[in-house]
Image 1 (cartoon, helix red, strand yellow):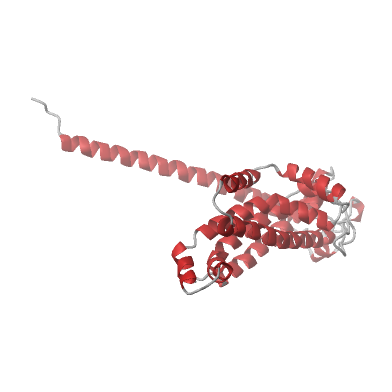
Image 2 (cartoon, helix red, strand yellow; image 1 turned 60 degrees about the horizontal axis):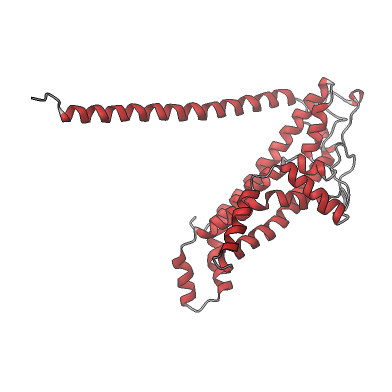
Length: 300
């Protein structure tokens, strides 16, 4: 006669699965903790190195590569031209990206008929999102700087960054458009609305939070990129801010990169101060964009 107890075996199996579940949760928590600890350590090191160097003079003076010019308040190693260059650069990139990215996504999702050509285009757009940024820099150098004769200008840099983040915006916008229930479209068609009226008054307002989120993430990547603007000829040290779309420009990542490569220890503090300014501007941009997204969220 068998002495196996099926109830005991079932209890053992449940307990084993619970132990496996607890181990899995522990691994996930440890992985999260590693990322958080690394981020906190990095931020603590940057703040420690920049302590006392982020001053009003640092924000309003042009840069310097002469250590003897440094004063205790950080004057003589300002980042003002790079701040203005980055703000103009990211503003132009946002304008180009919103029009081109959202427009392309709306066409692919709402107007283009399902076909092999559409699938081919969408697959290639998704693949372009993973292309290294240096490749887009080379593309911008060939098309905008040399082909269109724009030179190492602000608009050439903005168009190059637009190419970099355009696939991300298109993919995220398509996902946001797909999240709008089809029943809402059919209800609008039922009351006599045209396709454009349905897209303008029904689809886009409800997809706006997702579109804003994708745009925020894309611009957050663009503002910290160095390789693309390096390839189009952004200046590492510029003593005046750009005054037109065709003027030479600098950007905060370029300025920070230049300071970090200099051997004098003072420049390491200045580079850390530049990183703090860049992170602050990035957080402010995200905060403003999130407020705009929440304001126009129809679910709020």
